Image (cartoon, rainbow, N blue to C red):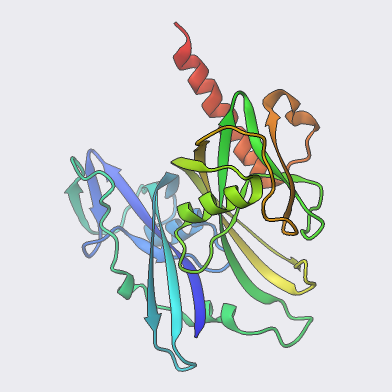
Length: 282
């Protein structure tokens, strides 16, 4: 059976303690290929809308009948805090006591679009890019003034550079479970996810490590995590995308070649470290 993984974004718009819902659910849309989550919500909420943070991650799985045969669909739902100067018409519900029980559209109603099925088509012409969307989750793990990083192996497009531990979300896997698994495989460390940081994306055309020309849309969730026990990192998944892992002290970061997601992780780590230091001051 063919398998399709995609991302739906949901807007949590709160004004004066009241939450916007449209037809009983948060305003939502499926993330289009190459689209940023912020752009998707602007398309849903209107121009001038802004994303203010990642609040929750859920997922669902179902089988969809299609002319080309059944499709096993895995939808990852991202709930994003949003501001909408001109929100769409809907109802406003009290948020007091709601916690994280966000009213999401039923997964069965998140229809599969023909454009999404293009990602399932095999590449026939080597000069025509294969459409690919990859959802990944990465962890910002800090201990004793150091950030946990992994070095990209020669199998990747950026060998020798450093990134955050984490990686692709398998079909049917919750992103939080994925990042816990990936951190263990890449560093030997067991971690507990402590919070959701943000979600971003990147869109480009290039060759994969296998030489396939891809129209590539990377969607990346960042979380914060804490090791259950701080130890010397060890790569367990030998021969994969990671060939080394280490704790890198903040003061040594200027000499380390970081990829973009690691740069963002460092910014988040430094910000949280500064906040913690401020709280510890008498």
